[in-house]
Length: 216
Image (cartoon, rainbow, N blue to C red; front, side, top):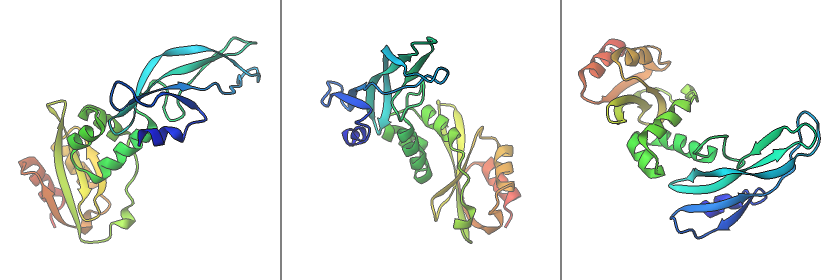
């Protein structure tokens, strides 16, 4: 899967070793590309590489590379070019972030998602917070069933996950896991009047929040 993914970017990179001594890790080299100076509008010259970086690109699969540096022959301005699917200073590719966000939509367990991708639960939480997609409320219909669960990360911090169980649609993540935060979320839920059942951890603050905000 990793090799197939990298072949999609073969015009940008050269594979240095398909079989590496470190499992699920591939070294690549960025090919030289045409880079134009934004100020002078002339072609910039390649003048070396930055230090080696290791980026998660797929489930427990890593790519090691050096970003390429370019310099303008007129003004001396420099520019760094990374892999096309990796943001500056990022350790996880945008492709992999999208996969993790998709997994969070279908799997409640943050720890399970973290284990699947070979990252920490803290990393999954950070990516989760970047997930600003608004649920498509029109797809949910009537007679909805909510699942409210709490998950541990960093050993002591907790995050609340709320999703619709029939469609498995993730409705939101609540952090910190305070009763008032859960109550506010439920109070402002656009489909609250369509909820007929709630599955929840046996935690008194959660049960009280549901009784107060979803009395029906």
